Length: 140
Image 1 (tube, rainbow, N blue to C red):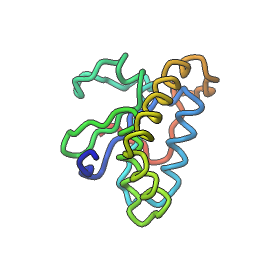
Image 2: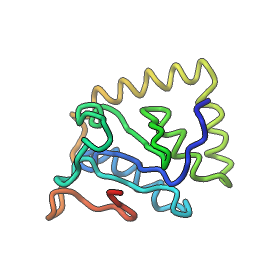
Image 3: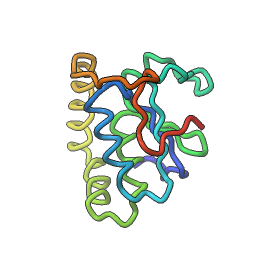
Image 4: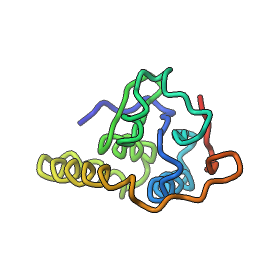
């Protein structure tokens, strides 16, 4: 199991992807006590350089970076997000199950399959600024 995230964590997601944005918005709508900060990598003012991660890597899979700079990618990103809800039995169970060896392997394979088809999923209609703002979005 990865090391517990140092909150708050930044979730780097593609705001133009309707599936991706809906998932992140669902987490942000819940009470996370400020533990989650969403960063839309599709926003024209997003700069990947300070994170030392290429834009292709950001676009390929979900990234979460905690306050200490620890990076979680793909399936691990979801686990890190779920840790923002310590009182949630559902996320706690999901976080435990996702690290069972066979489940983890299947989850990684499914995530890779999703990552490959994601560019062809329906796009979100962009707002006037070039990206749609979700609640709690920050670039810090």
